[in-house]
Amino acid sequence: MKITAQHVSIKLARPFSISRGTRTHQDVVRVTIDYEENTVVGECTPYARYGESVDSVMEQIQQFASSLQVIEPHSNVDVIKQLLQDRMPAGAARNGIDSALWRLTALHANSQFPSPHFDVSPQIETAMTVSVSSPSAMAEQAKGYVQLGATLLKVKLDGEQIIERVAAVRSAAPNAKLILDANEAWLGLPLQQLFHQLTEYQVAMIEQPVPKGEDECLRHIEHPIPLCADESCHVSEDLPSLLGCYEMINIKLDKTGGLTEALELEKQARQHGLTIMVGCMLGTSIAMKAALPIATRAEIVDLDGPVLLGVEEPDGLKYQSGQILVPQS
Image (cartoon, rainbow, N blue to C red; front, side):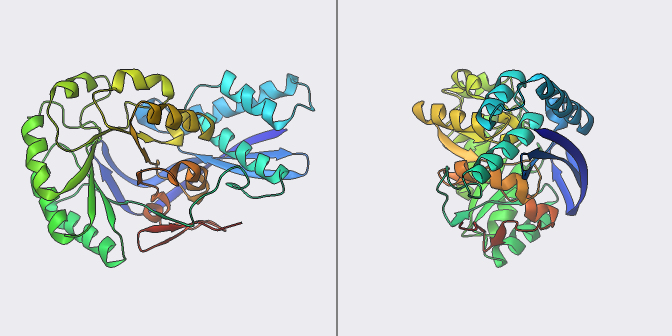
């Protein structure tokens, strides 16, 4: 088995802003696996918030690839998948390899991922992301998405003009379902008052209002709007400390280290009575496809990375009227 990695830099369709800053380009890492007569590709997105860079992720991938040289050359794909879970920590690098391995197992079954292991809905509603800007600019973004048929909007926010921005988006999209993403930016704000003020705008969910590690404060704050853990929830071991603070978790393959752990996280979260959101870092359809087995069952889906990038891959997913159109094999 030969594993290689390549850095790809993609210019965004337009600048993308969240509470931590603005980006004009997105760096992803493509993982290619050549095995027997098959070639498959996975994709991951290094995330600085989690201490990752393109260089660190590529180094991790190369180290794992080198370690395979001392393994029995005829080890099957299932053995390699288990070695990956055992030897590499959760994160983008493991996701890139894991995603490619799932594609390889599909090819060995004469199919195309997500078949034959997963049945995926042919259409999946996805959020379209309104990035942080002035209230009027955010309203224009929302209006544009709604005119294209979007029914679910994810509104990025920082700690400023929260009510004004949400009000502007709601006015521009009176019938859309709204979810809000604070990206950890609301610590120190009067949260209980803010949560109650936001009910006026029919907000369906608020994502990660406080930084990871500060989650315990939410346990004692009345919140009529459900809360979702994102930065605070990477793998299944994170769940116990989040119970009672959040009602939902956001599963991202670049956090879990791939679909293998994501499936376990989903299973344990539901056993604890939590609902599921599936999200993404900015990436192409290669990365979004890997998350479809979770997305088909999730209560909220946010897999609009290709729309934000403005890049279509060959055989990529199609986005229409706020829906992901999934090719059926």
